[in-house]
Image (tube, one colour):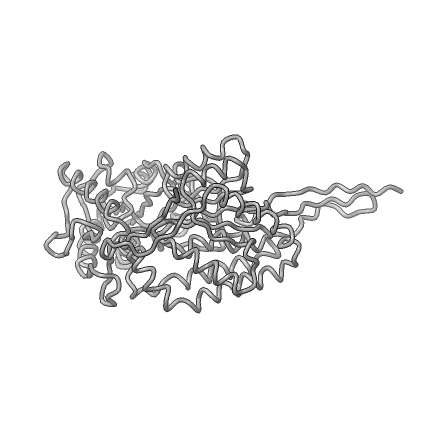
Length: 460
């Protein structure tokens, strides 16, 4: 019996698209073809691989007018924001620009007696399991550098954005990348786990839930397959007493609410110095009251539905529990048409503490708790009081202060006076339950290749 994957549109709850999953033999054949094609691909000059990848990226850009409403129908992001091509192109272009240096041999010695150096070799076949929240940008983080480094790539996209992989495959194939070198596949969980367990892949990059990351680790147990796992987050913001208040409010609230709060590095909890707390909350409430929740295909909509009603239900549960425990809801429900389904109103909570799930567990929705703090030490302790560590946003006029605070925070990235941004020149990584490994930057290339040492002795 054929398993089918479906995309249920959050706009109206109807099936927007569906595809048949590959059977286990079909999936194994796809992986075999990827392996057979990889050596020829890796043998091409790097300049040629880069050229083809960048042509594929440009082809995706040429589809943008179709992609933007398609994304709105698949996962609910309003069309007014214009899709993801800016970040998609920025990341791919940066990785192309640094490839030659990042993958260059490391010379140790070249004398009359010895020649010693280290090279980087492609792993072979890389499986990319991409998420739905930023489906193009998260996929390209690994797809572009993996291909440039000489790997073949198998892309398995989330069911919520199942058309994204097809778009990328069409664009890259039209650019001249062989079909077996870059494949888009539809797989169920059991088949994916079976392939990983059978060593069909040499490296697996997964972006998704902590539970999903555990499943990947379990499937790979004993295979020694390399893994890159970007999992959950509960990213904090801290506003020190010397911060630019207006800039902090604008950026942190946007970081909490943009994409209906469905951002890997979105702001989920905010700590504000007590001297600025009341003013910060007032300004934050004013911003959120100005949002327009509605159909993402309407250009006037600023806040679309969450990708699935069950995701919205989790946020509703966390919010109700917090209010029952004493939290104060700052946004009047009468201001927004929350339908009880995927269309979830935004909310700001005060009088919160870390006994509440909304301040501890990942929400991944348009809700944020705001707490006053007395000093840096209290803020640091609260920011570290989390199972996650992806990014932290520090707001201060003093760079040295930000660096000192950042050195004490358990996180993958420290921001000063910005938030919710992925810099492709820096390693995208996390700690604790956020996962392992690192993408983009020079380190991203190192994770997508393996070192190979040469110790060449010259005899007289």
